[in-house]
Structures are given as structure tokens and as C-alpha cells.
Image 1: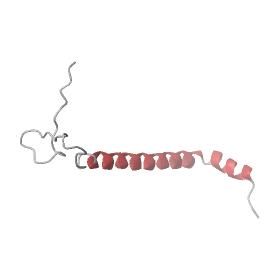
Image 2 (image 1 turned 90 degrees about the vertical axis):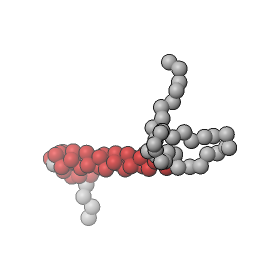
Image 3 (image 1 turned 120 degrees about the vertical axis):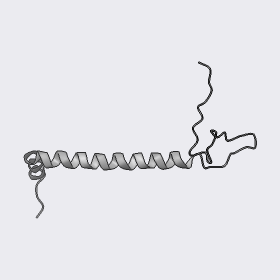
Image 4 (image 1 turned 60 degrees about the horizontal axis):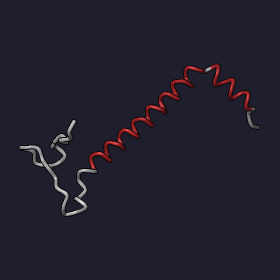
Length: 77
């Protein structure tokens, strides 16, 4: 025999603290997943070979790879 929907809703309101903690925990887990996926995408992008022979990789002085280099773009203000 199934429980009525009103029983489930009443249980959520009477145990509101556990409900809030569950929602916050699920939101934090989703946030961490999105952040890690964004980091993985950002780290993988510089490692892709250039698409054309006219593209160049500019490294900061003393750096051995493009992941460690930080050369700001020179755009006029």
C-alpha cells in the first residue's frame, strides 16, 4: 500500500532542517563537479596543437611549458 502524497509533504515540513541540509549538500556537490569540469577544460585547452602554421605559442622568459607561462595580452587601452 502506497503512502499518500500529503504524508510526504508533511514529513518534509516537519523535518525542515534535514531537508535544507540535503538541498545544500546536493547543490555543493553539483558546484564542485562543475568547477572541476571547468578546470579540466581550461588545463586541456593550451595543450592542443595550433590549428594553423601561422599560430605561435609565446612563453614567458624562463618557463618550460605553456601551462606555467603567463604572458598578458598587449591590447591598447
